[in-house]
Length: 204
Image (cartoon, rainbow, N blue to C red; front, top):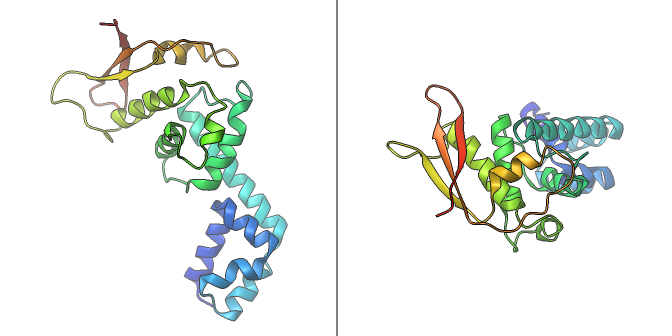
């Protein structure tokens, strides 16, 4: 049996909810397209389903906590509307290596437009959520040097809502009702640290 090939399938059972569910329903059918040898496929069909399910739940929990570590407002106890989005994110988006990359991927998932496969789920959230996600994504990217800063001075980005005010309000449960308000946010890199300072600029 090819150990690397078998390990690859086991890893996929661990991290890929789509594949895990297909394997649970019909293991031979899920394994057939993978080009495994008969002994490899037979061995993988004998893996205990409860072990696969437990490993999958552990991975899903780990990914969820990685996002929450970076994005404190992604709190399903305070905002249960995020539960189906989290499930869809885990299902559709492959895991990242680093916590910050996982959080950036989640922000991009929330920023997706009306043509995204999960657009109907996004429509259940306040209209400002994609703006919050963009604001947070930029914070992480700029802090870690994953997006460019100007040669000197801060980076300034425009938003349709007062995103920093909103983020502060999200300490409380629920979604605060906020009307659109054109807002600029200044991102200033902290020298020698993976951090940026942010502030809302006065409206022009």
